[in-house]
Amino acid sequence: MEDKSECSCPHHPCAACKILRRRCVEKCVLAPYFPPTNPFKFTIAHRVFGASNIIKMLQELPEDQRADAVNSMVYEANARIRDPVYGCAAIICQLQKQISELQADLVKAQVEIMNVQTQNTNLVALICTEMTQNQENINSTIESPDHQQAYGNSNTSLEDNNVYAPWKSLWT
Image (tube, rainbow, N blue to C red; front, side, top):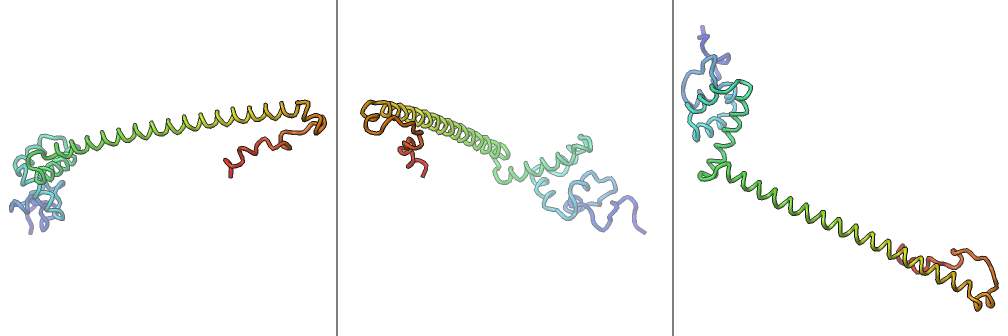
């Protein structure tokens, strides 16, 4: 008969108890957060924080915050092992630098968009000015006495005079 003071899975103690070589009791604070299938998670946190500190931190927190605390401890421990001096601070600084660079890139892109829009507006204004001038030139040519003598006083449309000919190369 098995002892009821052990976890619901007496053959599979949590990773923390297995690594610490102790009996995993039914109300083990570490069992929900360090499953036997992932011993590396506890090993990393234990190496940096120590088992007693992990247990103490978890006991001081409400149960609904414990999973996030364990994830934070494991993340901090991984960062501290990779960079013993700065730990997570190095990652935070790197991410802040990346954010600053991306914000600068965004500003550059917005300026470029504004420049293209301004160029587009200027081009449209130039085209309109040129078309107006061409139309005025055609009208003055049609109304001139020399034109009326040569071609008569016909009411031709602008399309017949091919007002759009100078712009045809822009559209093809």
